[in-house]
Length: 318
Ligand code: ADP
Ligand code: F6P
Image (cartoon, rainbow, N blue to C red; front, top):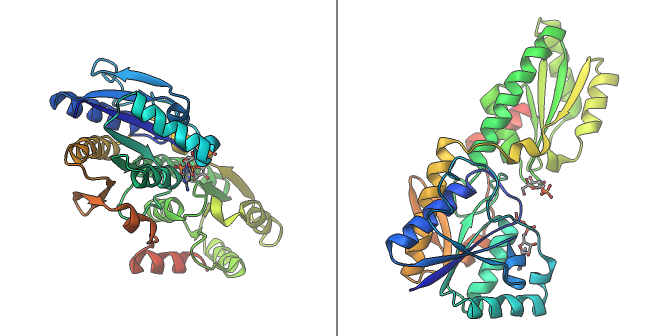
C-alpha cells in the first residue's frame, strides 16, 4: 500500500486533529503517504486534495476543530456526485480511505465500501449515538465543557435562589444531557428517549425550595424541543425566578480532554492498521479494546442507555 486518503465530515468535535496526527504518523511508519481531502465529502467530489505530512500535523494534537475542515455535502448524496468522488479516489491513486465523522458521514463511508473502496470509519459525534462504540470521539470533551458550565451556573443560581434551565446539544440523543445531569447533580433532566412529567417536576422542585434548597438546575436535551416552554412554565406556573442558558456550540470546540486525545490517537492508529489488513469497518471502542465493527452491525442496531442510566433518567424526569 503506497497511499491512503483521509477526510473529516459532518459536525466537528474536539479530538479530530489528534486523530489526524496519529493517522499520518502511523502511515509514515509503514511507508505509506497520506492525502487529506478538504471539507469532507466535498473534497472527494471536487478533488480538494492536499499532501498531509508529519510536519503538517505537528502541533495540532491539542487543538479543537479539524485542520482538514468539514462540511455537509449534498452533491455526494446524488449519483453523479458519488461517481465524481469515486473518480477522484482513482485519479489520486488512493488505495484506502479513512472517514472521520458522525452517523451520516459513516453511512457515506459504508456506501463507498459497498462500491469497492477500502474504507474505514472513525466515529466522531458529541451526541454519542453511534452503535458499536461505547464512546465516540469528542463526547468526553463536550461532557467536561457542559459540566464545567453547570458548575459555574450553580454559583450564580444559588446566590439568587433561582431556577436554571440549561439546554445541551443532542439532536436525537439525550446522552450529553443525562450524563452531565448526573455529573453535576442537576435536580431534573429531560431527554428525548423517555417520557417526562413537567408538572410533577415542578411540584418536586417547589417542595424542595420550601424545604430550603437555594437553587434548581434542570438540564434539557436539544432534541426534546421544549426548552423555552419548560422555562416559561417554571416561571409563570411554579413562580420560580427562572433563567435559561442554551449552551450551543461551545460544546463542540475547545482543547480535547486527555480521554479524547488518546482515544483519537488510538483510533487513528487502528484505522491505518485496518486499511493495511484490508478491513473495511468502523472502529469501535468496546470496553478498553478497539474493534473492527462491520458497517451492517453499526447501522442495523440502535444505541440505547443501560438500565442503570434509564433508572436515573426516570427518577430525574418526574
Ligand atoms: P454527521 O456525519 O455529523 O452525522 P451529516 O448527517 O450531516 O453529519 O452527514 C455528513 C455528510 O455525510 C452529508 O452531508 C453527506 O455528504 C454524507 N451522508 C450523510 N448521510 C448519507 C447517506 N445516507 N449516504 C451517503 N452519504 C451520506
Ligand atoms: O450531531 C452533533 C450536533 O452537535 C447535534 O447535537 C446538533 O444538533 C448539531 O450537531 C448541530 O450542528 P450544526 O450547528 O453544525 O448544524
